Image (spheres, one colour):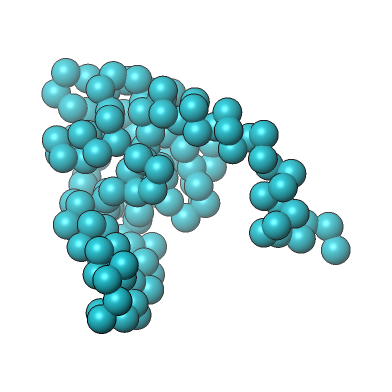
Length: 143
C-alpha cells in the first residue's frame, strides 16, 4: 500500500527520485500514465492489470468511454527504477502534469500520484476544506 506525501525535485534530465518507502512495492517494472487533475498515476503491474480490466468493460460506442480509453492508454509507459531509485518520465507526461522542478509524490493506496508541487498545493487547499463533506457524502467511517 502506498501512503504518505513526499517532496522531490525533477532534475535537468527529467528524473525524479521515488520515495524509498515506495521502491520495493513498485516491483521491477511499473506503469505511469496521465492521471486526473493534472497529476500522473503510477501503478504496479498487478494493479495496472486490474485497471485495464475495468477500462476494457467500458462501452466502445460511448464517446466519453472512447476518449477516456484513448487518453489513458496513449499516455501509459512502462518504467523501471535506476540504481539511485529514480525514474525518467517522457516529455509528454512532464508536460501534461506541468512538472518542471518541484514535485510532490503522494501515496494513494493502490497507486502513486506525481504532482507539480504548485498544482498539488492549490488542489490541497481546496480539497482539504471539503474533507468533512467528502467524508459524509462518500464514506460512512463510524458505524
